[in-house]
Length: 197
Image (cartoon, rainbow, N blue to C red; front, side):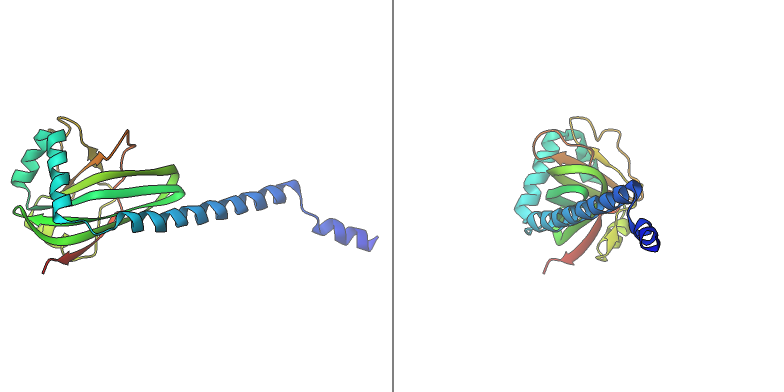
């Protein structure tokens, strides 16, 4: 009788089995997401060249000519010719870019981001960050800058930037490199900076 009671105490209930299955699924999702997180930035971080950045600027200006006001009046901007984003529940984004001040390339930068939430697959896009003031640009050039959580990107199309405004000293625009793109979440992106020699 005692042996039967002990066995009954250690057998799992349907609830415990379901909980165990869910924990296994969570671990597998996190592992898959982390694998993508590590792979995407590595693919997207092949060092961007000044020519690629200038080509990206040309493409973005062609897509939305009203973007010109940001080029004319910003203290500087960072251009990412190819940001790669992907994941499965947990994902990431990454890319490399060039920083311009007064129209001249002054440094290189990298972007990285961890994304948690419902997502599957990947996409590539251009990203440009305009800095409203010299102080905002100087803060970015310190090399350990993080995009404020409340900043969002404007997806470029003709006229999209006409009513865009700076928020927290920056204005951010993205453009898909092919096909439709879900809104690019830019809050929490982290950046490095290295001056050109």
